Length: 407
Image (cartoon, rainbow, N blue to C red; front, side):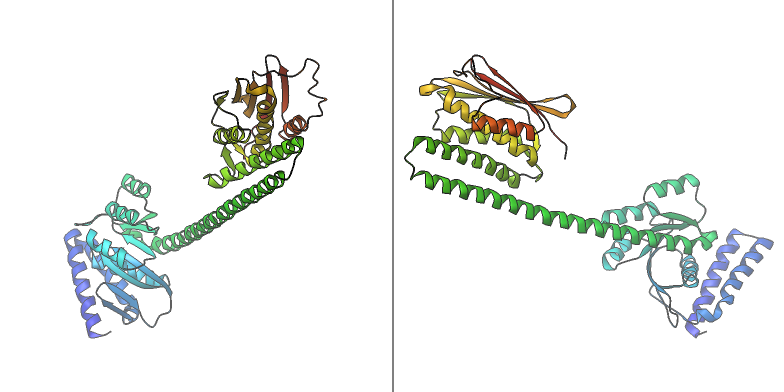
């Protein structure tokens, strides 16, 4: 054994002997000193391979599992015993011993650690205070308390506070299995966190892609609408112009759905109340209707619809409001159009659209109608798995009940 290491070992032994003499007497004292000395001398050859400088231990001429240990301990002797256990357990240890809050803060910021081994109570520091620093740093490090006798309640409180295990210094045989277990669990937590971050990044990428898709669909629909508008300029037949206008409005109602979706935080569904307001405003503008002549009354709950329900529902509203604007009020006779959406039991919705216009003829058969718009309404209601009721009295009223399927 080298002269420096021999001197250090003698000093450590004398210090421990003095501590034991103050605590124990007679036979107990002699037995403990004999055990401690035997423990040191038994591994004398191994101590020749130890080099200790500035609280850092590097085990040379020995190939083990690298382990970076932040040792929160005020006793150099107890630190030596724990580090010896780590060597015997097959670890190649790099460590720093600290015993104050400032030193711990510096150590955490300066280096990456695999595990923290902490005494429970020290003159200037404690395990609960160390745990608090680890949490505040945002690190997920195994934290094992190795201390003298502590009460069961104290140990349980420490575990609830974030410690992963606690070991009595008189039973260091538990240290290596505890470290191996906590290192494995820490690795599992890291892998899970990496997987979650990867999934999150993948979802964000898909959200950006989906927004771009909705944006492009909306732009393409608007291009189709613009082409119809250009083509309509060459038409002289009023009936053909009406057909083109109806097609444009249907396309615009679908384009508006995609616009709302890519502007929404939730790409799967839209706030349908906002959508209806914008849709009806566009229809009033398209048919050049003055809102002072035909008023709009809306009573719409804040309902969120998925795209599979929003598009057919939007087309239904487009058809029925268009019919009212075109036919219910001849010569722009003053009147009112009402839209209502409310929730029913069993996750159903009821859409009601009505006007107080001239209504239909008494012999009008809604089920047998040849009107393209009303046939579309019936087909879209079927697509929603709903049913529709029609009343023509002092105007018209449509009630459509359909399920609002959860995503």
